[in-house]
Length: 347
Image (cartoon, rainbow, N blue to C red):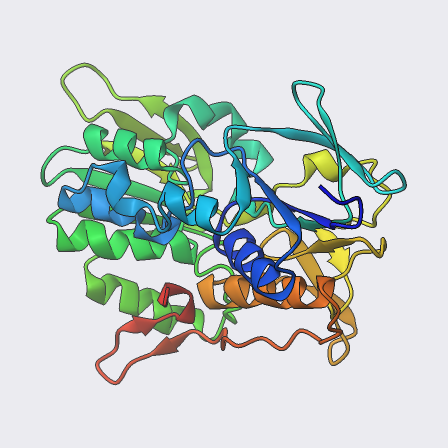
C-alpha cells in the first residue's frame, strides 16, 4: 500500500460514525478507513429498540448495514474493541489490548451513554438500562404482560419508550423531575401543559420533589412487585422494572490526556474540528461553538447527529463548512394535545 494513502479512523459505529465513513469513502475513494466500536453488533438503529416490546427479538432485524456493506466499501470494521487513549501529537490511538494505530485524520463519534446522577449510583444494580440491544431484551423479559414500568427522570428517550409501553398494554409511571423532557428546555410556565399531555397519554406522573425526592430503590418483598421506590416523605411506589432516563453523558474517557480541549464534551469549532487540526468530533460526544449564543452547545437527535457525521467527513476531506442544525429542537403540542418532539423523528 502506498505511504501516500491517508488513513481515516472513526471511533464509534452509530449514526454519526457510519454516515461519516460513507461520506469519507465517497470523497476520498483511495483512502484507508477504519471504524472502531466497543459494540459487538454492527451498526443498528438504537431508536428502534422499543420494538422488542412488540415481540421483535432477532438482533439481525435491527441491523442497518450487513457485513457485506463494509467489505464492498472497504471499511475495516473492528467490533468489540475499546480505545483507551489518543495521542494527538503522535497521531496515534491505543487499544485496550495495547495495539497502537496511526491515523491521518480521526473522527470521534463515540456518542454518549445514559447519565445516572451521583445520588442514584448506589441503586444501579436494581435499575434496568436501555442503551444496548442486550439491555432492551433483559428489560422486556423482566416486564410481564400488562406489567408496570417506572421511569425515572423522563428524558425524551424514556418518553419515546413510554409510548410503546402504553401501546403494548403496559402501565407506565413517570417519576418526574428536572430531567423530564430533556434535552428540551421547558420553562416552569410551560411545564404544566406538557405534564398534562403526558397524563393524557396514559402516563401516571409523580413529581419527585413533591414527595421529598427519591430516597431509595429496593427489591420488592416476596410475592409483591419486583421493585419498590421510597420517597423522602415516607411514601413509596412499586413496579416490575425501574428504568433511569436522566439524559446522556458523552463517552470520551479515552480522550482524557489526548491534548484536545474538553468541557462536558469535546469542544469543536463550527466546522467540527477540535483544538487539534487532525481530530474532529460529531454527534452527542461534542459541543459546537455557536456564534449566535457565544457558547459551546450540544445538539441531539437522529437528524442532527447524522448531519454532523456527514459534515465532519466533508471537512476532513477538504471542505470548510460550518455547522447549521437541520433539526428544530422545539417541543410542541399537536392540535389534539399530544406531545410532538423532533427527537422522535428518526428518518
